[in-house]
Length: 284
Image (cartoon, rainbow, N blue to C red):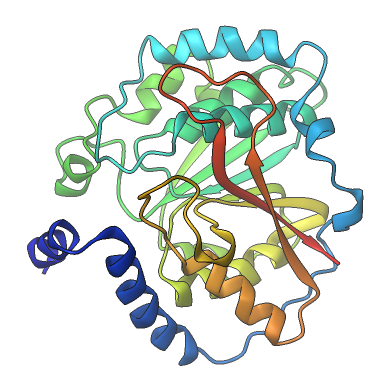
């Protein structure tokens, strides 16, 4: 089946493949029973200012040092589905600026966003009680011998890289399905990153459950959010699932809005675009 899907992606134009995927995932989403989304823990959309959140005294200098340290041990591998470099920097800036005490990341993959979040948290870990980052993946990403780790193209386990960056004490790994991990958790995290690009039905459940897991005024950041199902770059394959999930929740009456970060407020790096598909969820 995986080979067939890869063949279809190769043969079909990106736009057609995205549309077929959207139709299939919409059908699955429509079969999910309605879940009540209490958006009370989310911040007000009118109070969110990305320029304020992404810029801060000393954060840019800290970013340059963190990037240098991470680049020495983390290798970008084409086709591994790791979060893109521009989004990694956005995550670093957001966490440095907001200084959440408890962070949840759904979707560890090769550990790209994990490393950047942990490096940001390292900067304030000695203030009060240490911050905590829980990163969840369906597979054991710290065992490169597994078939799943090979599919992620993991050569150095994330836990080992975190130790080399002096961040291992900040991070806790968990192996679980996203929905299973989130079910039953209440007001536990200050900042949640949904970075697992699930199907629309899973995204719908996970968004509702993640909001429940937030502390008041906590931040919920989702990846692969494409407003109107439009690509950010020409020819880009679009993952519509997060957009479809948010749209359904709004149609069901949830006063929920996704705020795309879009164009990021710093100089474009070589090979970058300064565009991100990250979006914060807020209440209207």
